[in-house]
Image (tube, rainbow, N blue to C red; front, side):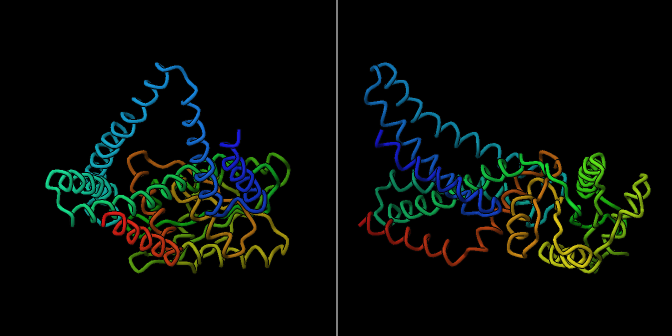
Length: 332
């Protein structure tokens, strides 16, 4: 049972972190560490398993990661092609394709190092695997916890529903991605109204250089054209970033009710990062996600993770550098 102690410890720390504030990336890391220790403890139990069970488990341990890696590479490359075909060639649309090619590159480097016996390639391969392994671990933590965070629905009464903007078609029309947010925001509003406490819905988004009007105005028009009550719509039309969305909306909410509670609505791939931003900006509320087209999700999730990773760049690059040094020393 002692083998399970580290897993129990980190699950307890994870639970404490969630109770304190579920909008922390450290919760994702603690959960990932807890699951990792639990997996190691379960593997240790194989020593006491019947021979056939142990052999089958060992075969699965070898085959599943290999098959999973091949499937992941195929999925990322195929998704990258789909993104280019449907969304065009832009840096943000190339992320899944580049991730797939990156994995192929690391695997190719490993094979080449083994095949040639090159000491330099061996050092490069070992350091690449360590760094990629660290980043991959954080990515899995991010995706897993973001999924769990997105399962939480607001059950308590709220005073405001804030819908974050995301750009307009032709500079004036609401695109499907933004319509999904507005429809989800309306759902939350109607759930609250059914309890006898209709909140104020804030459309949040300023006017970009290629837009004919502020996003918040187009968003409000979208709702009003579909019968949403005008007296329950407010516009925040100065923001250009998610942080400004939240800061300026916070000012509106605090001005109307200092002890407000709110729900912030964005797309599901953006919900966890928006929650992290809501915490740092002091917004008192939960972030709720709306559906996103399946083909769009992988690249968008990679982009969100990259933004979170870079927001802690001192720690993450420091650890990557340390791993690189360890890889070099191990290969010497």
